[in-house]
Length: 191
Image (cartoon, rainbow, N blue to C red; front, side):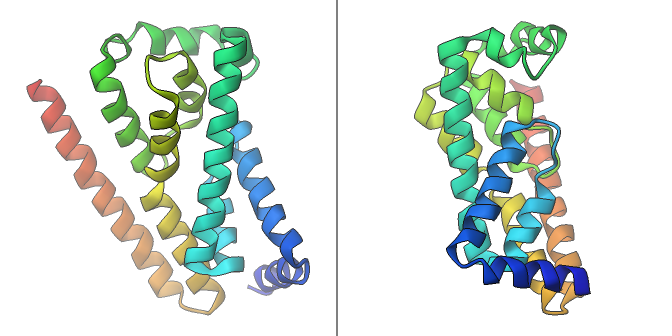
């Protein structure tokens, strides 16, 4: 706990630079596909509270998704191949889902709303999909809400000693996400 407080103090003592440190970590997390997002969301909540942390994370997600989407549109598959194997990319391109433009947005929304799903490849692949850029960027930013709010809330509460609220927030997030996933699967199987 003392390490967390020390980190929080260092960020707070950095003034506005602390915001840019957390924002930079969030940008890096999305741009480098192997880094998990929840620890950065947690740190953001720990340093700037639930709402402040959430706003920083959303800004980072928006900027990262914007940058990736337009780099993929400009440079094509060669840009994606820098991060993912050709085999991984072809699996997505050849799936039934991505041959059906009307299902793409719903799938992306579900994938981004469920905490812990691997969203990184989707962020890169989206530039190749028949989806309007603004719609994708908004989905990929704001569908992260359950994960971001639970992580920033947990970070904010843990630093003030309310670890029970942190655990409850994660449990509720996974419960709601599970319900959304079940509804999606049921709806998708009836189509």
